[in-house]
Length: 156
Image (cartoon, rainbow, N blue to C red; front, side):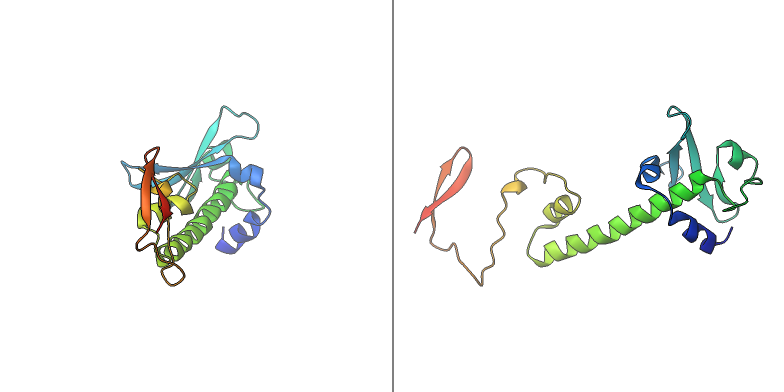
């Protein structure tokens, strides 16, 4: 199967089909693969892998037969879905890396920028971090009081 065929095939993959794909990172082998839920039995998952020597493999019945009956795309639907899921994952990674760089350029600490880009709650008390554009305002000389473990400005 050529890359062009896969690219054409993944254009028709639905969000529901992508949601059946679970990206797994095998720490022992230092490789990424996908577990894809079966459409006919939600308790069954197939493993989709790629390597340079063999190309795509899948543990589904069609994959175990070497995709010999997969005439349309040359691989099973689980491979197509996992390739679509991988593309979506990488597209999101690129976007999130850009968001992190933009936030850091605005003065946001790296850990907070990462948490914000991945829609996570920042660790420790960083959720109270205030980013101030010093060209527009200044807190120099501001008097502060502590209330409920937080510092509150009271004025000059």
